[in-house]
Length: 246
Ligand code: IPE
Ligand code: IPE
Ligand code: MG
Image (cartoon, rainbow, N blue to C red):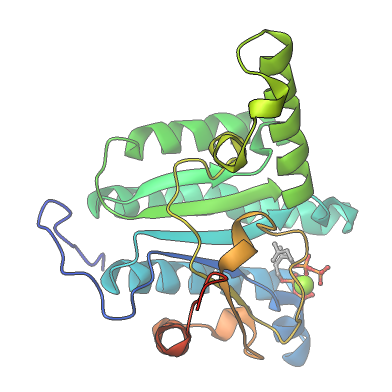
């Protein structure tokens, strides 16, 4: 059953102090392989983990949870797996949007999602629009997302503004780039989690992770749950973030 929070009631600042957590949800295939199941079974179990962790993030008072669901490099996978992932995404939006909306969640997308299949793009834009007026936490899904592609698109947009005479090239600063990336109106990234034991960023939020705390766990994504998120937030709370100062 959907857990309801009252987005209109001010919530106390959570003790962990994190506003924005992003997760590289990795290990679905290995989870399935361990069980002698097809990879799609791992992706299905991964969607269940997305549901659990989205609820937990709300309950733990996060302002924003960003989930890496499909990278700009994942097109290299067999067409049948790509189709399975797109099917799961479509089903997830259709099945879960009501719960998100009822809980005041704002659904956001980062990545070049417009390159996806047109009916999926329409479904996504509809879902984003429907929840845009909510005042609860943001769930941002990274779709066809690659940080390098995001930065290339931002560079192109800024270059166009220079050509149009709106800004001077040498006046471009960090804030302009921040404001041109897909994450422009998301809170600064505090904690970046990757499951499955891999210790790399795989082209995820390279700019935004400049001062994020990194947390790697061997747990496979379909096994991740509220407890695992709480553990990551406990670890975050103990980190000493100096941002280059003392
Ligand atoms: C993450 O699980 C899901 C996506 C990248 C879409 P994987 O499918 O990468 O699982 P492994 O890494 O093969 O175990
Ligand atoms: C990163 O996982 C992308 C997502 C979780 C969506 P991958 O499984 O694609 O990363 P690599 O290939 O191991 O670097
Ligand atoms: Mg993987």
